[in-house]
Length: 122
Image 1 (cartoon, rainbow, N blue to C red):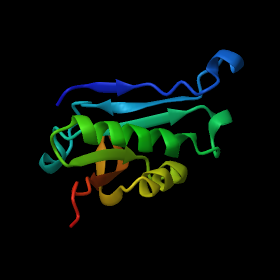
Image 2 (image 1 turned 135 degrees about the vertical axis):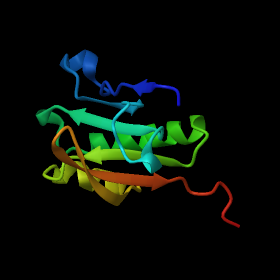
Image 3 (image 1 turned 90 degrees about the horizontal axis):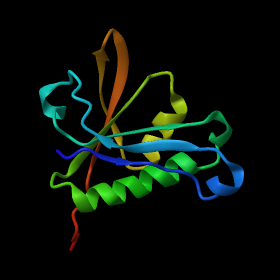
């Protein structure tokens, strides 16, 4: 898998002078179950001042569209800490479904997977 980082700068960064958040795909080389190894993993983090405004959902949807056009496989994943209810909600809104809970470096993470829709449903 090719590392493909996308940075979301926010539409008016020049005017407001700060970054709202970052998101992108990467291969973090995590010790994940075999069925997840090598899959494109999307991650995001947003400044508190950007929470609740739809930026994460908009950015994740845009990144997914980019990933669908550039990655050969049909599955992508994201890991969300169980207490991060807002990010789990973003993942679900963007087509991810809960797959399993894993332990990485002594902490639990919920793994969400998304399978790309077939190009032609007819």
